[in-house]
Length: 450
Image (cartoon, rainbow, N blue to C red; front, side):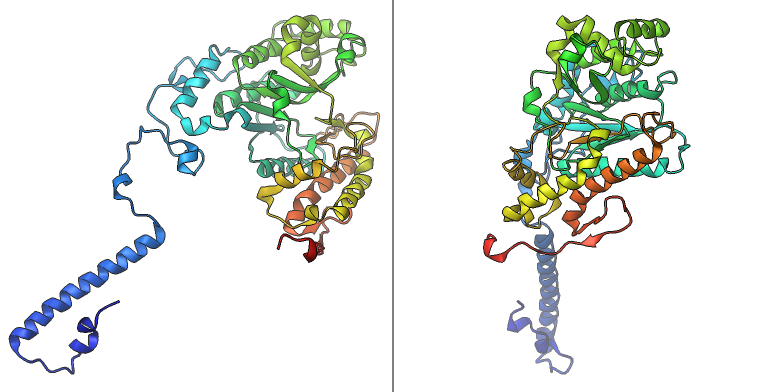
């Protein structure tokens, strides 16, 4: 506050000066007062935007490392030290045909130079997915792919995962189901901060938006796929696992696997021979070409001692589930979850999307009797529309196209409802994507935390 002797009334044009010398002195006081007032205003605004003025730390050494816990701002996205890393190696290649060596050491070195990324790296996941470069032949194919991508973006946003969508062939020969391997390798090199790369096919949809992968279960493994050992070693079936969804650790073992795995694909001069070997080994394989799924099964079958201990065959929940045995149960599953919420007020409480994992963990206590997999009323983590081919429309002849497209719409809306609830709306009809209803507020005040 300005003191009375500096008030404007003392220097009003109507005021009469006592003498010349005092008037000059008053000018000086007026000038100094104005400067002082300006400084006060600047400091006030500065303190508003910068709560703590610390001149000792205003200039920092960019090479000094500040931990995430100390800074409180998480990873540092604005710093890339000048220390040489594998990125500066002119021999580095992202191509599927050129192997990467000493990857564990190179990745560790990068993390050492970027300490803010080191904290939490063991649980950091990058989801990778994609589609073909050209427009879909199926009239609704592009729409379904767009919604499929939105579905994955929703899941990643809820759980704090990065996502990369690729719609190009990173190797001209590695098309169709083989196209994923060049992308996964490139993602591993591009994301040294991530421990895991999670490949999810474009026709695989997240249908439990709260569920989080039990990474601790996979701590001694480098690859996670949905599969069954007895079907590999006893039945010798080419459907003993599904390679359309897999979680792979960002490490040298995985680089070596991708190199061996891809060498059974179109990039290999022995591609035709590998198709013959696969079909002679797995009698139920329907087509002659070597494919990525049968190739992985072959490695597990023929080289069990080398691969089995490193690959987790997840069969305890729907890491990915066959859509035919799932999509007819969405309505019943919805009702069962609502029944849980009728008896658990906290699960009905409106909340921010950012804390969804808290409610997912809380819900687990009520899902112990739900079962897992076929026959369960638990939400499947991923519903996989294998054989539907939503883009080109060339679906498996075992079922008609309408069942595929309607099934995908139901799955998308089933998942979307779990997201929309945070925004206050739901799709009342799982087959009607264009209609939403506002959710009523039914969280009882007498059971609230207030």
